[in-house]
Structures are given as C-alpha cells and as structure tokens.
Amino acid sequence: LLADKGNYSHFMAKEIHEQPEVVGRTVAHYVDLATGTVRLPEEVAIDFAAIDRLAIAACGTAYYAGIIAKYWFEQLARLPVEIDVASEFRYREPPLTGRGLALFISQSGETADTLASLRYAKAAGWPALAVVNVATSTIARESDVVAPTLAGPEIGVASTKAFTCQLAVLLALAIHAGRARGVLSAQEEQELVDALVGVPSHMTKVLARETQVEQVARDLAKARDVLYLGRGLSYALALEGALKLKELSYIHAEGYAAGELKHGPIALIDEAMPVIVLAPRDKVFEKTVSNVQEVAARGGRIILIGDAHAAGEAGLAGETAVVMPEVHPAVVPLLYALPVQLLSYHTARVMGKDVDQPRNLAKSVTVE
Ligand code: G6P
Image (cartoon, rainbow, N blue to C red; front, side, top):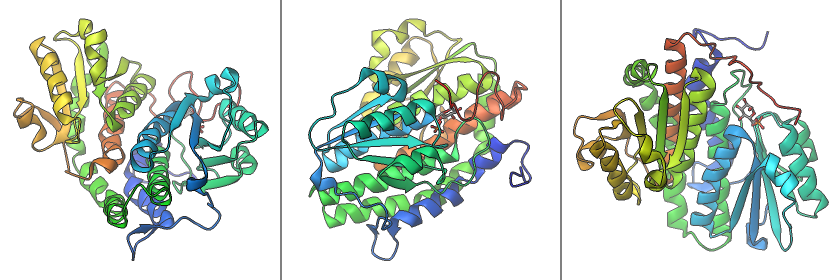
C-alpha cells in the first residue's frame, strides 16, 4: 500500500507535517537557487507579457489559493485578474475576449466543475494553464500548460499540503510574470525568491509550536460559532480557516474580510464567540489592529495569530495565541496556513471527529 500514516494518527497530521519538505521540493522546481531567480520548468512556457487578463476558476481550498494568487498577480505583475468558484464560472459564461489566459487550480485534477470551466475557456479560445497535483489527471491532460505541485499523494479529505504547494507555484508564476511584464526589478525578484526559498525552514519553526495551537483548539472545541478575520493576502486565509474548521469539527465558522466586520458580523460578537485574527505585519496591519480593537471593545474573545510584536502593537500584550516568524509579507499565506490547518485539526481531534473522513465530504468531487 502506497498510503501510510507513518507515526501519525491521521493522514491530515502527516500531511501537515510534510509541508516543509514538499513545499521545499516544489519551490526548488520553480526557482534557480544559485541565482535567486524564478526559473520555470521548460514545459511551463507562458509569455505573461503577451496577455492582459487572467481568469481563475477552482473549487474549495484551491479556490482560496486562487484568491491569494489574484492579489499576487495584481500586485507583483499588475495583471488584472478575475476569479470565480468553478461552479459559477462555467454557468456564468463570462465573455473571454482579448489576450487572456485561463488558470485552473486543482489538487485532484478531476473536480467536475473545474474541468467544465477548463473546457469552456478552451472552447472560447483562451489557452488554459493548470496548477495540479495529479500529473495524470483529466485537467492536466486537457490543459495547454501544466504547472505541477509536487505535494505527493494527499489522502486527508481536507486539503493541506496541496494548498501550500499551490501557493508556492502561484507565487513563483506571479514573480515570473512581474519580471516578464517589467514590473519587478531584478533585486525585487531576488528578495521575493529568497523569501520563498526561506519558507520551508520557517514552516518547521511554526510546526514546532504545535502545542500552542493545541491549547487554543481545546478552547475552540467549546465554541458554537467562530469568526476568522484577515485583510489583503490574509483575507482568503480567513475564508480557508473557516472552511477547514467547519468541515472537520462541524462548528459553524465564517471567514470575513476584516474591513467588513462593521458591516454585519460585529453584531454577533460577544464573550462566547472566539474571533481568530490573522495579523501579519504587512501594509494593512494597522487597519487589522483597529478591527481587533473593535472586537475587544465589545468583549469579544480574540485569538491573535501574528508575530512577536503584533499583540503589543494591537494593545493586547500577552494575547498572541500563536507566535509567527517575521517574514516577507508576500510569503505570509504559506506560513499562516499552518496554524490555520492545525487549529482545525486539533479542534476536530479534541472533539473526537473523524478528521480524515469528515461526514458528507469527498476528497474528489467528480459530479456536479
Ligand atoms: C473537495 C475537497 C477539498 C478540495 C476541493 C477541490 O471539496 O474536500 O479539500 O479543496 O474538493 O478539489 P481539487 O481536487 O479540485 O483541488
């Protein structure tokens, strides 16, 4: 049997802990370590200077990787990006005109709606790029260009290592696009590549803090509702955190853009509802801090995920639940994904749920 849990009690735990290795392997496939530049594999031949639009479609966790990619492509390469969940994309029938590229992200490469979206884009005359984990899959076969993630087989129903490998590939592609489109300087490329290459060792440090996360999970297991907040690159991670928690623990969770707090979810806040705030010190940190203070002022229970100085700056000394390393803001999603995954894993485990096989869910959704 290929699949083996090793010393772990669940595939999900094993796959979470494999991330430094598989992300390292994936990064090495897309960068030249010696020169600190992105070097795409030969078969990943895309001329990003020749396009003026990118359309992304994917499902579930892969869709959240797509939202993060949208921010990267827009910021680093000034390439306009639209993104849909694949089940909307295929029936919305977006007009694909001009010089565009369609991007599909999928672990399995078999998700029915993503495949239908790929066929739609190709029929409309756009080339299709797929970021997939299963090289022999239908989506890989039908795409014009395949950018593989080298996560290895993922068995846990909830995607973990495939997600961070998708992020690694997408960031490498966005950096490459930024250079091709004359947006990034050679020095900026080098800084970003250095940050990307440094991710696996930071991941190892974060995984070493698992007991901090377990403590939070014991508390979270008693909650009825949980809110996740983030801005910028952490917004989609807030959505991913909520998805993971609800699918594994069956606790109701919502992810929100922190700036939307006052447009609704703030009404829910009381002592009983934990609010998990993803607060890396990026350019929107101050804004996130003011949202944290709005939660605190209403007696909300804040679980802060940030670096060692974040809590102090937010006026919440001692409140950081999970202390994160300080890294280049562009690679934050790759690292902050780990506490988000561990939180849902440990919460579900503490509650005695079937982590690898949550009820009603399938690893690969090949029907509509
Ligand atoms: C299912 C899985 C998710 C996954 C989604 C998309 O819902 O449970 O973990 O993110 O499908 O799957 P794909 O294989 O296309 O990435």
